[in-house]
Amino acid sequence: MVEAICMEIELKRNFLENPLIETIYFGGGTPSVLSTNQLNQIIEKLHSVFTISDNAEYTLEANPEDLIKEKIHFWRHAGINRFSVGIQSFQEHSLKWMNRNHTSEDALNGIKRIQDAGIENISIDLIYGLPDLSEALWKSEIQTAINLNVPHISSYCLTVEDKTALGHQVKKGLATPVSDELSEMHFLILMKEMELAGYEHYEISNFCKPSFESKHNTSYWKGVPYIGIGPGAHSYNLITRQYNVSSNTEYIQQITNAKIPFTEEILTKEDRYNEYILTRLRTKWGILLNEIVQFEPPHLVEIQKLLLNYTENGFISETEGVYRLSQKGKLFADEITLHLMT
View 1 (cartoon, rainbow, N blue to C red):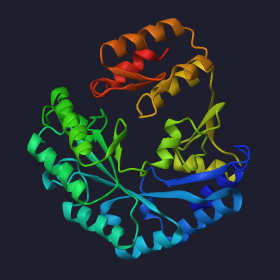
View 2: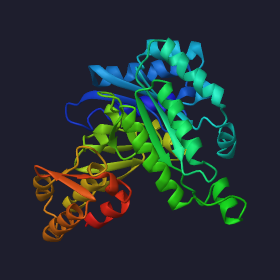
View 3: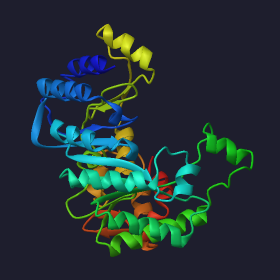
């Protein structure tokens, strides 16, 4: 697989015009299982093909159980300067319910090992909306994360997918479905506790200490072009989006024949407008009326009326032409976004 990935890097050499790579993200799947030689091989190939910024952010997604001292030191020397750790919960019963392989002790010790290795830039994931997660337990989860002194916390509501074990359990009545009221309570608590602890709510699901935003994800939200490598990876160059095939077998077979197996979507102005609303409204940077006009949306007058209505009703705040979700609006982010999209 690594050989195929290196071949795709070479094939993508001219996908973007004279790019300066500011962020590199090893994620999707479990990149922390890569051997030292494999990770080095990929990083060396990236440097041989692209111009990488001296201050580039190198993020590695890792599971807590993979965070052993030797691996962390290798990753650090390979160039990794940011970790995104899928903790999900510090409660043992919740981890078992979500079928996670690690324990709360694994998570706590793993974060400490990263910090002991001299890496400060750490993000952790937490899940809320679990049926048995009381207000007190959720506050305890958040406080545990804060006490770890990690500068970035991503938190997502539990979603039940149809074709998962949890989805089948909910259908059969063996598990309690996610409650909207409970999820809303958890989200309100999350926003309050994060603010009190000095974290900025810079994207609907992301909180950070000053200057610790995820540079990589921020580039997505701001519409910056990017290159995706590997099965299922997406690439974007302002004009098109490319989606690599997800099948490992087909991916390797095609790449070996010097062909990238992808589906391409040519973006219309309407597509670009919808993506702009979908990504930017979720962030502290908000949406700008003069930027909306550039996309020439067919229902501009209606969009302006909607923005005015949401502003008057306290769901959106407006400052110097920038529209941002209020705390009240963040509870209805998906609904508001769908109304504004054409």
